[in-house]
Image (cartoon, rainbow, N blue to C red):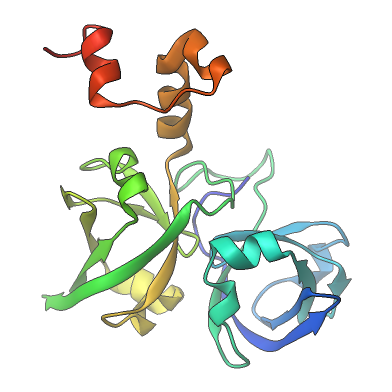
Length: 218
């Protein structure tokens, strides 16, 4: 588990095809690698990766085809900047929100404009994720815990303050940039709970018909 509070920005130095999938190498001298053990988890642009080699100033991780198909990792090249966060410990402060490192889908930056010292972004999520994104709720963008400022269908607004721009990869975003999205885990579990016993029979998630049938609206 993670908090969505980025500890360092690393740099991809190698994306190597091995046996049909990928071995990724990332360097980030800013992190204290003395605390990192083999098998530890590091969120890399929001993707939970397992350390298979500690390089002293970075790490290597194996990436499955499943991860490649569901995230932006397949777009990464040497020189790509990535957000990094080590896994949450019992002593950690939960400064963001609960983040699993399991990417739900890929979004796209559709606008960016300055607002005093902040930057405002609009992000388009996949339609299937729109129902999980709420005004003033939490969302994870490339591993960064952020607050949703407004929602219009599958497009939502973010206001990014100077500190976050400086300490994450967000300042690199431009219109058309693809980003990893993870919705609030509470929203996912709430949907499953509302389905009740129907969840065991492989039925679809929350729909208008389901809400009407169960008295949530007429």
